[in-house]
Length: 178
Picture (cartoon, one colour):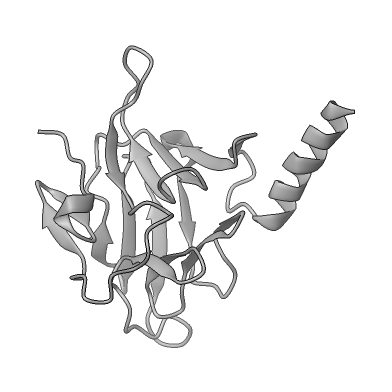
């Protein structure tokens, strides 16, 4: 009985969050993961990239990557583009471990994890999106992350910034290798 419930949960998750890649890994603890061998490029859409138990991540038609937990809790700060007619916008999880937003071929935002990122994870646990490095002794360092999913957005928060070489919403949200 528990096997069919587990299978139903996994199938529900798969149906609720269409995959940009067919070969992604899914975990029972409500995560969607992409390794660097699963690079992808997405165009803006009105549908979430990933939707996991009320944590929805969109690459919007204005060029902005946004995480919603009800209200928006994080954005890349790249809004203001006409990606639906005019500008060419794409979100890329690159083989070098960097998450990048391009508009008309120019990188406007990145996670700053090129050459270090190993795993891009969308999750309902703690942080909505995180990029980790190479696992060592049972844990992998978090190189970049969005704010905690339980946080309410700060309307006065600054836009994207660069902290120790990593682009983040605010420096307190960055975790960068020194």
